[in-house]
Length: 261
Image (cartoon, rainbow, N blue to C red; front, side):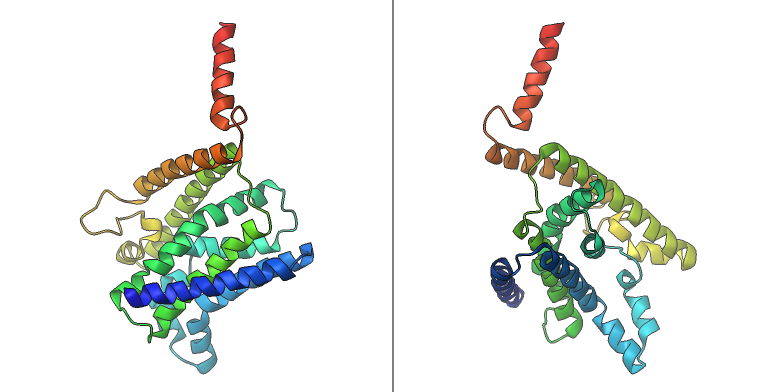
């Protein structure tokens, strides 16, 4: 695990340097939009690089797809974040409801899922080596995705708004559940129930952790929403002065309703 830790620290250093360069050089809105789109495309290219290689060299592309179902459908949360980044890069209006939803989802969910994918990489844990391109590719792809995620606060696109943030995270959790149900259904209908069980999109069918059968997507999502609630309440308390915080406004509203009775 030390090897994984050191490799990720190197990647974080590279990301930090790149973000500093971006901060100093990219000033125009057009430049920011292009970078958001390009960085999303780079992650997707890394994600599909082995498949692209097989296709170009006449290798076992179909067999590779069978062994890597996340290349066919977004079965894992990071896959959804990756495609969301690409969609966000194409959006023209940054103040639309869809744009705000994607912004909150990509940053607040992506920041944690990418770090988990880097520092607790399942492929590396199963085979602790960086000599295997598939393992290195998986870690680097999460790092490029992290760079994409961190561009949002760098470009001033993240807003601390408790109600907006909680609403969008709740919609995000529901959205990922629907995606997971769809992916599992596709594999069950087109392949078999056993394949759907193995794919286990969004961990809906069974828990990813041995000995913790209860920890499926609904429980994971509920815990995540509680943690986001605490996070957003803390951010709101730090950002806003007393009286302007969500809790203060809520208590004032309840107090006024009580006084009217």
